[in-house]
Length: 94
Image (cartoon, rainbow, N blue to C red; front, side, top):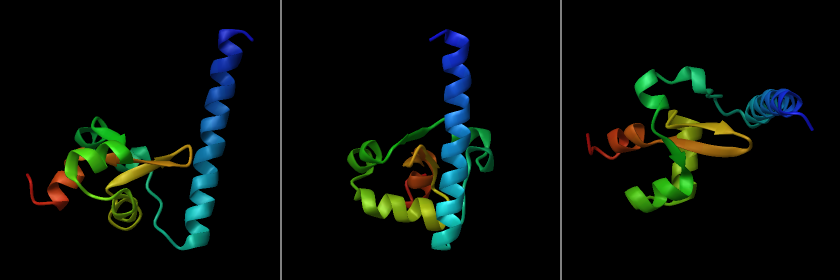
């Protein structure tokens, strides 16, 4: 597969995943967050939930709840990415 074809397919897949995430969130009644909803300073520090769990000693299910309900993260490819600065603020560490 050519590099351009792979890039185009990856972009299409990303758009499909984002749309699916929005549809699933709407079906669950959860607010939908996208990367464009974050300020530039929040977007640069997105980390996986397992990394945030280790860094902040907060269970992953709690982090996912904060992402859904409080906008502490964004869902990509079916996985939540957490804004480290927003978690720090939530924990009163800023």
